[in-house]
Structure formats: C-alpha cells, structure tokens
Length: 193
Image (cartoon, rainbow, N blue to C red; front, side, top):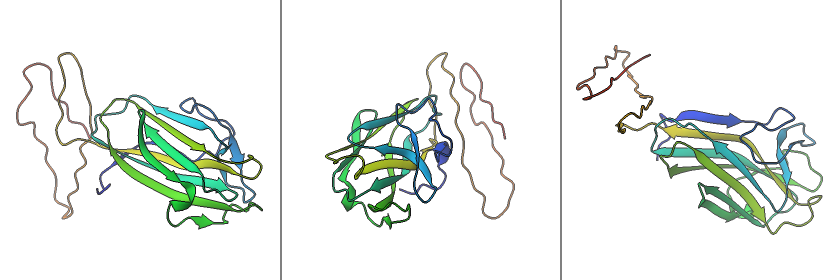
C-alpha cells in the first residue's frame, strides 16, 4: 500500500513534560542522550484516543518503539480492540542500536503499519508483557503519527454532514478545475481551497 496522499491527523514527539489528554497514562522521560519520549514503561498498557476523524478508509500508524536493556519480550498494538501488531521486541527489523546512551543498552525500532479503518474515532493501545524490573528493562514511544487516506467517494445519511480532503496532484503544472457533476437531492456540496 502506498501512503502517498495520506493526510496527517495526529503527531506527538513528546517534547513537553506532561502528556496531553488523549493519552491514558505514562510520563515523559529523557534518555541520557537528551531525547525525550513517552515512558519508561514496564508490563503495562498506554492508550491513545483520537476523536473526530474526517472520513477515511485506511489509516497509517507509525511510531518509534524505544527499548532499554535487552528485551526479547512481548509487544502488542491494538486498534479499536483488534490486535494489529503482536510481536517480540527482538524480531522488529533494523533498530538503531545505542543511540539513546543507556548503560544497559537501548534500541529504537521504527514501526509503520497500514490498517483498514473508517470510524470517526480511533483507540490505540500499546502494551508489553514479560519484562523484568523496570530499572533494567523498559520501553517507550516517540514520534507517534497517525495519517488517514481520504476516500475517493463519500456517502452520508439524512441530516449528517461530512467533510473530506481530495488529494490531487498535477505533475505538469496545469491548472486543475473541480466540478460538482450532480448536486445531492437535499443539502449542498461545498468545495473550498
């Protein structure tokens, strides 16, 4: 699946000292290198809720999964209660090794996945299990981003308004013209820049 044309709807790189309301728990930590992230977490779940999403059919979820120590334990990501990623820390490919400066070692895994989704809200739950003491084994998140792929067609019900974004590229530099081919029986279509 190509993610070209996806529209960002959420991003957090956890630079401030406190979490925003959309996160269920956790705190902001700073690695010895000075990088801040959501964590340090142990055998627990942290949730992210994003409400009022525009119309879409697909979502791209990307994040940096940070590990401290030697982790070979379980990591799970659920979207609206459905497992979309279930793995062990040590099988995610090509981590950055030692970039955060922890004496016990660390890795940063860049994770990205695309899932079918068309609801107005998204509940993500990131969790880990099987870890040892948090002083030697911990995990965290950074650069969490959610992008949507707006649909090609839109449908709605009586008295329910919807909005969407058309992603159109004209590579030759020609002027693009939009035209409403057929007005709805009731209501109106509004096109804005």
